[in-house]
Every structure is written in C-alpha cells, then in structure tokens.
Amino acid sequence: DVRAAFRAVASLGKRASAVVQGIGGAIAVRDVMAIGQIKMSSQQLLEMLLSAVRLLSEGTTTSSSTCRKASRALALLPGGEALEALQQALQWAARPSAPQAVALHLAAACLEQLSTW
Image (cartoon, rainbow, N blue to C red; front, side):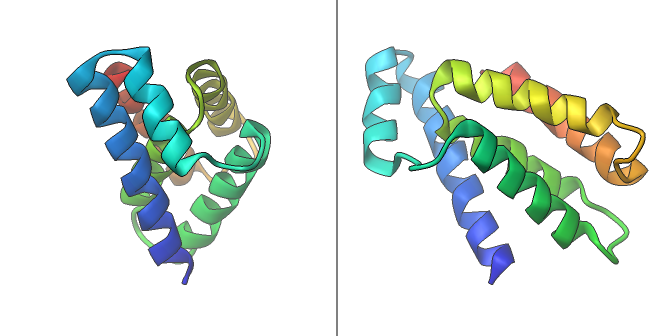
C-alpha cells in the first residue's frame, strides 16, 4: 500500500531529523544514514515522493499531511542533498502546471521542514 510505505518513509525521515536536533552532531546523522541509507539518488527519491504526493492527493480535499510526509522523508538524504531536494520540491510547487492546492501545501511543508534543519 502506497500510504503505508509513505508513512513509514516519513517516519524514518522525522526520526533522522530528531536525532540531528537532539544530539546535534554530524556523527549522529551518519549513524542514522548508515542504518537506513536510501539506495537511490536524491533526484530519484524526490521524483518518487512527488509522484506519491500527486497520487495520494487525488480526490481528496486536503493534501497537507501527505506533503508534510514528503518533506520529512527528504531528511533521509545526506545534508546537502536533502537541502537541494527541498529546493527542487519548492521549484516544483512554483510551476504553473502543479495542482494549486498541492503546490501550496507542499511549499508550506518544505518551509516548515527547512525551519527544523
């Protein structure tokens, strides 16, 4: 199930972010990344997350929870790649072709995630 997988990846990303804030060191980030390292490029992960956001947001009145999960999942990427992916997600949200409600929720979720890093 896409929703369950999405929830699990977001949860891992949230935990990775919490470890960084709680312990506050690059060593902690590497430890979390070594345990749950994603074996794909940041671009591939971002494309998969955006596809999941579009899919899970179809036919719903709100996509804010889905967008927050996507932005949290980006925390699984190494520091510089995570920031770059977050910026690319914001660029996607700014495209005229992006569904308006999803774009606004994704932009808000990315900015919220950025404030926690």
